[in-house]
Image (cartoon, rainbow, N blue to C red):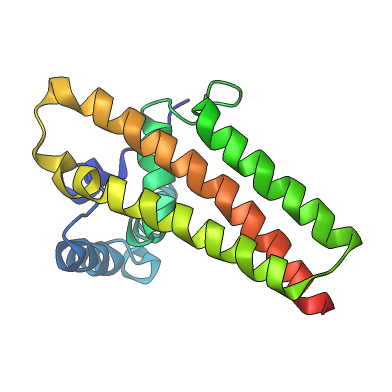
Length: 179
């Protein structure tokens, strides 16, 4: 079963950079329209339907209002986050493997200068990723339908790389709390 299309629910085009004001306006309008208190005298079936719509409204807003959740949602809607079906470029995996080896060394021999260097390397990689994907995210909505699959693959690669870097940052944070 596919998840509901939150963009269609709100009458918005699929976008990595949606109109936040329009999203919020629609959320509040539906919050009033689907508030269970306004349907207390409706039939039990209608009350159940209203409760489902209120839940959908909350889920849709939480997802689309958050940059990371929205990105994962869009990729998921296009089947690009299916387990085991993602591939990352070998050069990136080698860089991450090198960073992970440095983290393992830090675990056995804590060194604040080495930890700072790993953090700087992660920040540099992250900045490069952000700069590279920003034009794709900004123009996705206006792309013709036949160009969107390539853009989605670029976003998928960005998203997966970002997840790798997040895990490295989390490991670095653990070392920082031990120091």
